[in-house]
Image: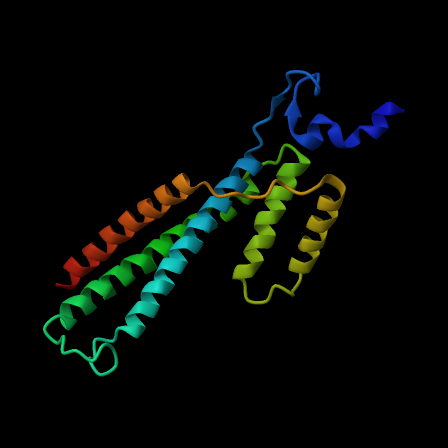
Length: 194
């Protein structure tokens, strides 16, 4: 009964294909795991952009442009330019965050159309579903606690997914891409208003 002791190393559990799991068996391309990685990256980029937006909000609130409330100097000739630049940068940051979050939601929407090829892929899909409960009104309503319970049970049997470690180069590229898209949108809206 040696086979029963190896149930967690079977190819369908660990996501390998091939006849010999100890040999040169190749890793199956589990699209659920790929989707999870892309979702994690999109969420991380949206969090970075959220922080940028919050910093800009704080800076705008701290620098009201009213000399008595800020530095005490008379900067009235620079206030309209500085205020309009700050508000334009804030508008771009806000839209960039929306683009990044929309991308993360697009990955969540793809969950039903992706088949998991391993238990790790199933855990990845459940991680995304449970992660989405942070965006809903009441995560204590059915079925959210129940799904989280199933996820905990699976992780207890199979183990955790590897910890997500964002790649700085990829994050910078995604933030820059969303920033450029947002800048185009804000510029187009400003032209439209004129």
